[in-house]
Image (cartoon, rainbow, N blue to C red):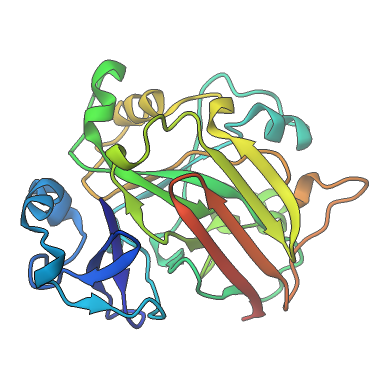
Length: 281
């Protein structure tokens, strides 16, 4: 199943994609939030779906992030060996964990706003995991039982704020519009092997990132288990798993970054694609 939320920002309604068509399921579901995922909502919705009885939605509609604002957006840094190498960072011995403010979450095709005083706004295509069941001290063997689905994420980063302004990375990761998610959440049955997915990103049509989740240093079940040792993962929480090589910071001979008017496009096998126009804030 593919879950979407559609409509104006702040007033999105839940929907699904069936055979490439959009349908409104607001008569069946209040929202794709913690209560939905915790209450066996995906299975119950699947049992009630009948496209003939659902209102169809115009595909020109704006898509919002496919989940209501989660309690946590947890990020993993330097989780592809080639990305660590391009940034001259050592290969992590344990996952590098940081948070991204949930106020950064926007729809998949919303504009990217370059923050005031930004000089180094960068891109990062990432596979994100949506938690479907409360996870606390979960072992790796059972970690995938806690997955509701997967979603495309662009982990935008302001490198000067992140790396040159002291403190934790969160300052460079949490600016408004820095977390476009979607277009949809794909349930695990839609994906197959989550560790064999191509992910890619272009800026102004130039391919800059072209990687595969087979190259993750720490895979999805390990990350869920690892994080659950330090915090309770709640239904609807998002874990974003890191980016492959090709970010602006790693460009040769010199790094370069986004400017107003640029167009960023990205995608992951089975998770669709998204597009952001870069604008001034």
